[in-house]
Length: 428
Ligand code: EPU
Image 1 (cartoon, rainbow, N blue to C red):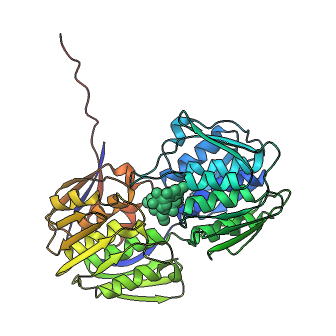
Image 2 (image 1 turned 90 degrees about the horizontal axis):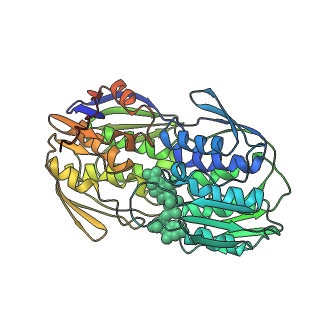
Image 3 (image 1 turned 120 degrees about the vertical axis):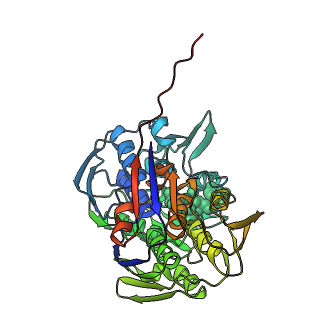
């Protein structure tokens, strides 16, 4: 068993290099299925969700070759229309993108129920409705989602009830080869969608409007391989911005797109933190003194739900009463019990958490999911004493080299490997 140990209280100074965006890399990896050719993807983050996705493609017959730590070559020409392993698929959310990609390429898809962080109900009804609009027969039986279009898909009008990232990705993937034109209304506007469309257009697709709420996909007959570089991870960047704000010091967040970080920067500035953007970097300056504020998550370009738990740590420390309301996921508050162990004064009521600021104290805590785990790392960095975090593998789903990146900024943080408990045979 591995645990993260943090001796809190150090200021953070220096530069941190941001890796490629997990939530952009994942749809692009599954989109290589449509290319039916060799693709080279650069700036791929080495996180476990990516590794698992590459394993899923390999299991289905693709040839995957690591070129170096951030580049990968994927040849999907041998990928077969087989049902992927339920064991692999059930460990990540992004495996749902197999539905759109396989439906688009083979006219049929069967995918066991996906996994992912337990942050509230995550149905696939909008995905399935979109496939139906494109002419597929869909079902959800015996732990398996299926979509079938033996006579091919037809372009159509898809109106999403809410701008779901996953449903937008799957609608695009399925529409690339659909005959005629597909218009997706109320599409997600996240940079991940821009990356997916950028990759597919490089492969020969005709997708316009990505980054706006209306996306037009004109069906094409085939795609070809390409090389593509993934955008930097706005959530990883935001996490280091919050760490700098919580600990105090001055940190340059390097290789980012400052525009993607506007909502995060604005909230930090509200709290009295210095944020300056220039070129592809953002400098965060903090003396550790934080003002109370009220935050509400929303769809991009609103405040990202994936930054909710990290900001919760700042609100727990800020002088006065603060609130955070999550309007995207119901159950993003699992950090609350853990922060309480660290002396935080937090009460969750419906989809709002209310904080009365205080000093955090070290405690043994358990990461309940990816972003809440990152939040506990930040809490440990800012707390007095030695914090011990277990369930480290959840944090590794989305953060590349988090220990080394924080150590380079001056944090006193290590990974401790403990022998797994050996089961004692029962007697009698
Ligand atoms: N929703 C439905 N029906 C659907 C699809 C979504 O009701 O068919 C609801 C969800 O229940 C949720 C809301 O719509 O309340 C938004 O869900 P969305 O589909 O946008 O989320 P997702 O595609 O499942 C992705 C990211 C999440 C991120 C959300 C929101 C990936 C692999 N996951 O999830 O990332 O929180 O968008 O931005 O891209 C993370 O990285 O920690 C993470 C959880």
